Amino acid sequence: MKELREIIRDLREDHDLKQKTVAAQLGISQQTYSNYENGHREIPICAVVALANFYKVSTDYLLGTDTGYPGSTNLKNTYLDNVTMHDVIYDIQKLKPEERRDLMKYIRYLSHND
Image 1 (cartoon, rainbow, N blue to C red):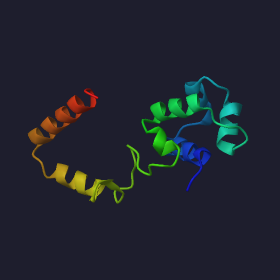
Image 2 (image 1 turned 30 degrees about the vertical axis):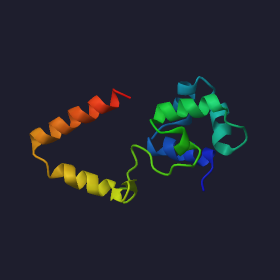
Image 3 (image 1 turned 60 degrees about the horizontal axis):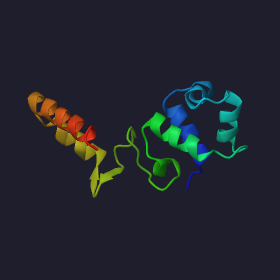
C-alpha cells in the first residue's frame, strides 16, 4: 500500500504540476511541501483535506483506503460493483448526442444536490 507522501506526489505528477504550485494552493512554502512528499515532515490533517479538495479526490483515497479516484485514467479499475470505467464509457458512447446531453445535465443536477 502506498504512503500518503507517495500518493500526493503521484497526483501532482499526474496533473503535471510543480511542487511550488501545489504549495501555493496550500498556503505553504515549496520547501514545506517538498518535505511532505519526501517524508521529512508529517502532513497535517488540514493539508490532507485541502489536497483532497484541490485534486477532487476523497481523503480516503489520499490515506490509501480507497484505490479509485475521480480522474483515474485506468479504465480497467472497478468503478461500481463489477462495472469498470471502460464499461461506463462504452455505454455512454452508444448513446445518441441528445441522450448524452441529457445524461450530462442529470449528472450535474445530482452533483449539485449533495
